[in-house]
Length: 378
Image (cartoon, rainbow, N blue to C red; front, top):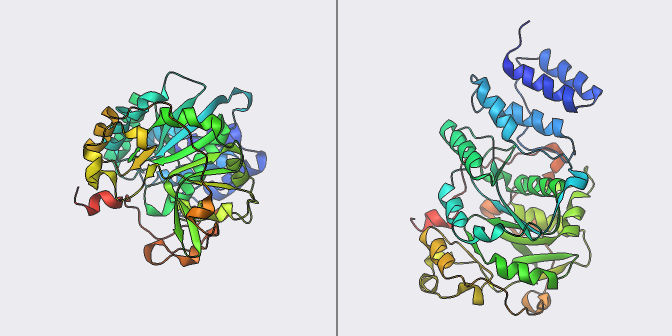
C-alpha cells in the first residue's frame, strides 16, 4: 500500500508527540477505515495534548484542498499549539488578544497603524496578537492570511474554520494558548473594530484588583446580566479557574459572552467592573461626536464600532497616556443582579449549552459574522 504525503505528515506528528495508545488507535481507525468520513468537529477538547488538536486540524484541512499536499503541510506548520512553555514563558502585565475574522485585513491594518504601536517597546508590559481561524475553505483567503501572518508576525491561527457558531470555542482556544505561552497578570480579549487607549489602560492596571476581576461593558436586564465579549479583561486567576473546570461538565456555547457567564456562575467573590468609559453602542462610526472629538482617551478607555476612517481619526486624536484613576463603582448601583440565565435569550441568540468535551456544533453556517457595520450599509 502506498501512502501519500498527507499520511506521512500525520504519522510523523503522531510518533513525535503521542503516547503509544494513541498511535495504535490512530493506525487502527485511520489506515483500516480510509474511506470512512470524519465525524470530528472543528474544535479541540480540553485535553492538553497537541496530537488531538493536530489530528482535528488535519481532518478539517481536507476541506480546504484535498489535492494539494503542500497546503496541508504549510497550514499545519502555521497553526497554534497548546504546548506549555514552562519556565520559558514570557512575563507580561497585559496580554491583548484581538479576535478577528480572516477577511478583516482592513480592520487589522487600521489597528496596526493606530493604537497597536503601543504594543511594542516595553516587553514586560504588554503583548498584542491577532487571533483568527486557520482552516479556511476559501483558497484565496487562506493564502492571503498566511502571507499576512508571515509579513507582520502578529497573527496566530487557530485550528478552526470560520463561521458564527464558534465564538465560544475561539475564546476557549485563546485562553488555553495564552496560559500555555505567557505569564500574564491580566488578559484582554477585544474585537477588531475596537479603538483602545492602551497607555491609559497599562498605567491603570497596577491599581486594579489582582484577583477575581472581570472588567468590561455589562448588559443588565431585570433578572440577567452579562459582559459583552467585544471587550473583556480578566485577572489571571479567573482564566486559570475557567480552565480548571471539570472536563466532563464544562459547558460551551456558540456565543463567547454567554459561555463566559456560564463559567463565572460557579466562581465566588468576583469583582464586576462595569466601565462607563467604554463606548459600546451605537457603533462609534455612527455617532457624530466621534467624528470631531479631541483627546478621546481623556474621556474614554475604548470605543466599539470604530470602522475604517473612524479608527484612524481616533488614533490621531487619542492623547493616550496615564490619567487619574477612579475607584471601581459599586456594581449593584448599575445592575441589581449578577446572575445569568441563557434561557432568557430569544431568536438567534438562544442556544443550549453543551459539554465542551463533545466538540458540539451549532448549525449557524460558516459565513463570517458581519455585525452592525453591514447593517448600516458600510
